[in-house]
Amino acid sequence: MANKSASVRGERGQAAAPPLSPPEGGIKGGLRRRASWFRGDMALAILVLSPSIIAVALFIYSFIGWTFYISTVDWNTVVPDYTFVGLKNWLRMFRDNRFHTDLRNLVYYAVGFMTQCIVFGFVIASLLDQKIKSEALFRTIVIFPFAVSGVVTGVAWRWLMQPTTGINLLFARIGLENFQPTWNSNPQWGMWAMSIAAAWQFTGYVMALYLAGLRSIPYELREAAAIDGAGTFGVYRHVIIPLLKPVTFTAIVLTGMNSIRVFDLVATMGSGPAFATDTLAFFMFQSTFGSYRFSLGAAIGAFMIILSAFLVVPYLFSMRGEVER
Image (cartoon, rainbow, N blue to C red; front, side):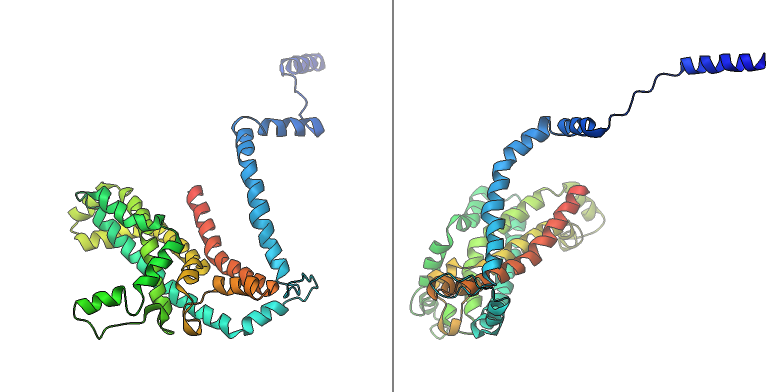
């Protein structure tokens, strides 16, 4: 009797339990899941971005790979020669005295250019953030040089830095006849002078970055710091500058990339005596198209790509961290 009641309860429990549907597996289940992923906004995004992705892969990354490949062959004449020589062109580049001069010039130019752009860009943005009258006019005047091409900037500043005209003529008119620097023609200070012309063009863009960052800081934070007894200097030191670290990092990356790839200013203003204002990009151009040493030029270009990676890769990781937070 007990066994019979147990079997009845088992049958009732089995009847009460809902039937289990077989799990979706195998090839059909995988295809169905993939089809559901490739729908709606995801499909539209892939469709819209595909031309750009293909173009970037073809015209940027494939040519970067081609540059590294050419740097390992023996193509140093007009006739192409794809004989593999390993790091021979790299060793030739590292032993070249002009390459050593270009590295020194890169350090001088980067320090001068980055410092001027970041400091003056931040100061001008802080002044414009005070809600002054005719702010739009001053903002346009400061950012206007960024719209001018590097060639036009180089031609204008080449005239301004002539020893007998331009800025030196203004110094003579105000009684500073003894102060007549040679500017970009000076073998020791040529790159510092070159950085002035470049900073004049790029400071407006950095100013726009900082101004956007300043306008994004809530006014309540500044007011709270002022209530706690912090003066203007204290507010900038403990509130504004720390909050603008992402903007500063972006400005460092952009100005650093510009320092590595600068070419148009040198091409228009001249490299000066003893390669006073020579750069890696100008050295690469002359080696490739002037001396037909294509593999040596590719090695210089590949070296510039590696230098740029030290700036771009940390920036991409920082942006990824910002998105995840």
